[in-house]
Length: 413
Image (cartoon, rainbow, N blue to C red; front, side):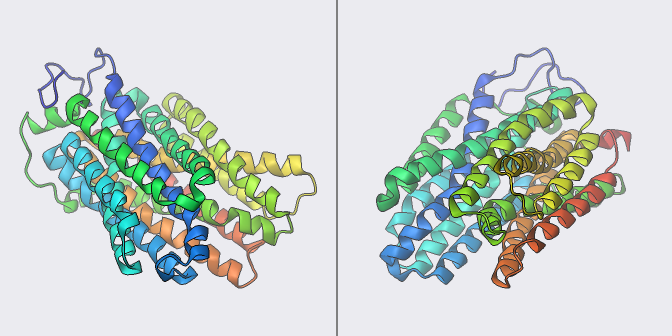
């Protein structure tokens, strides 16, 4: 089906069960999410080089400011894109977001001051933050409702794949860090071109819009009585989930060091954590589609809280430690994505993008809070065990938030 054409027959949820899943939609959405995973790691990978070479006079404080502004840009982009994608379409917003992110990423190495460096990262973050919620919405709407959880979790494997790619490239280009940004931006522009020619518009959006652009979708629509309970639960769960994801990815090695583990072992645990995350995403999606998204997210967050509490115990066996860290990754990362899957399944197509954008944007606030609080605990000398106690408590809050979510869809409420 050509981009922008209207589907002839759709299921009640806006999808076409008889239609074969478009491979271009799957591939292009997955690669777009992979770009965000790449970007997640790229700044952290080059900070040591920026500090060692004193590029533009960078200090540790400057690096922290740039990293924070990048995340703020991502949060604003995620929150802003929802109503726009529900009004103008998923395809246009995704392509525009990728182009914005790519152009300003290529420009980063040309910054002539720390302020310019930070500004470019902030603007790139606006585009990047919009990419994930729109990609997840497109993927979910390209599949029947019974496969919504898998659509979200399998798409998010691209996120961790991108992080691994950056890590590998950083080993080769540490002294020429500029190429990490050039590669990221160039790939992004190439993907945008492919999206322009190959990415079809969401059938669910076209059905809801009647084949034309819709009126503005205000965020106040999420406050309707039938949606408010789900929104509050999703916002809290997403905040807690991304707090865990970013807090662990940022501070796990140092928390391990605080517990007395050797540096190589502490860094290895970060790789094991993310390996568990990939496995958890695959398994979690299939389980959720069979057993229900809410029930699976509830169990996943509960087990994650237990695993995080166990990490507060100093373990003498490397094997036992690795197993606990692996299963922590299995449940923490996929639990967060199951929150997104719930959104794509519960909310109707005419407001789905807005709902997912709000969940992603509010969750991004957690991605800033998590590393900040954990860093404060580490600086105070309380990284271990209190860092893991803190994470476990966050997991408990996430369980409570998911427990409040309505079952079924908004139409059943």
